[in-house]
Amino acid sequence: MRQVMLDTETTGLSPATGDRIVELGCVELFNRKLTGNNKHYYLNPERESDEGALRVHGLTTEFLSDKPKFAEIADDFLAYIAGADEIIIHNAPFDVGFLEAELKRAGKNRFTSVVAKVVDSLAMAKHQYPGKRNSLDALCDRLGVDNSGRKLHGALLDAELLADVYIGLTRGQDALLMDSASEQKSVSTLSIDFSQFELTVLRANESETAEHDAMLVQLDKASGGKTVWRTLQPAL
Image 1 (cartoon, one colour):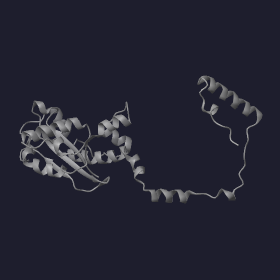
Image 2 (cartoon, rainbow, N blue to C red):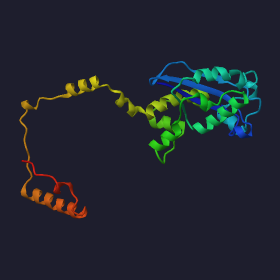
Image 3 (cartoon, one colour):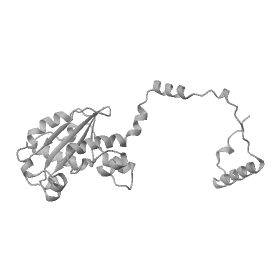
Image 4 (cartoon, rainbow, N blue to C red):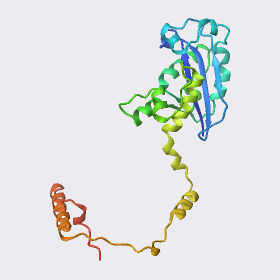
């Protein structure tokens, strides 16, 4: 399973009004392990960043002026993501919208036609933690991911944090990967020979038995006579 965590930084909020990508970061997981085979681009957007966006990422026009344009890295980027089983993005519609606009402008294939599957980790988090804050920072705090170095947003840094957050969000799946041999070994290791113990059996007294019978009668009435024990044969 090859998964790619992806994040972008942009000049503003909407590709429909001409906003562009200024940074693109990708982090690769293979079988849920970081491989170090990452991709990172600073890009010349050929326009100024909005003040709000600049406060978020801090990438000035001067810094980006000598960086490649998206069209110059498009083929390299598409080759990198090709063959990935999943692309995982926090708030995927935002980033995918920008990627589609950039690829269309560069005369390349659509992003969604190249990748097998896009997973929105924000939607996953909202499902797992309904009613709570599910920003990347909030999830780092909740899942114990160290984000102390995140003073400004950065595409590569955020993709690296997302990798740790995603593993935390899906950690329960690790148990499903246990093979039958390991399962058998675990069970046999925990087996106990109870023949060496003298076990005491505590039986209910008359008062406790009466209270139990009264409770069964109430449950039977509440269910309209549909309680399971009506249909069960007494043990011999």
